[in-house]
Image 1 (cartoon, one colour):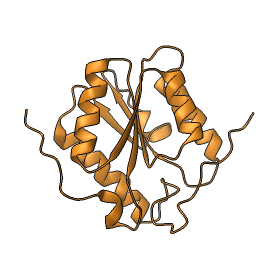
Image 2 (cartoon, one colour):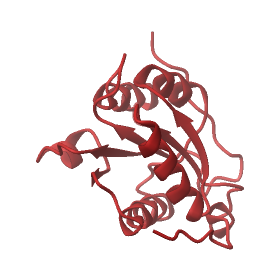
Image 3 (cartoon, one colour):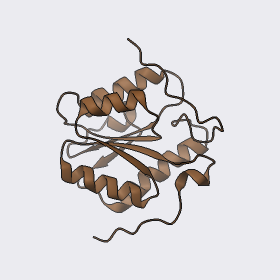
Length: 159
């Protein structure tokens, strides 16, 4: 597979400096693949090796999109998504993407904004990034920073 690096930055298209992505997967090869695919879309990528790392990063830093494996040590992708939704409450939050080999019919309806069934393709990742951008631009407000000149902030986690 050939992945070409994009010549543009997504964030500059909508007034933000970078489109930031958190990728959480306990499989090193999957993490590297997602990192390459999201970077090829012009995203700035942070990786987490397990659910606990993902949860800590998601609640302490801003991300426009969070891509979570369902089955991770310490904390599952589902639990990370629940915590993020809870921490943001009714405020705009990151676009939540589940990447799993066992998608369930209600994943996209309840906990996640999009589901990427494994194995993923470059087209799948581009489509998810486009959906996240569309949600941010159209005001359906997933990302708290996109389209806001002040950059937004991560809300304090609930105890």
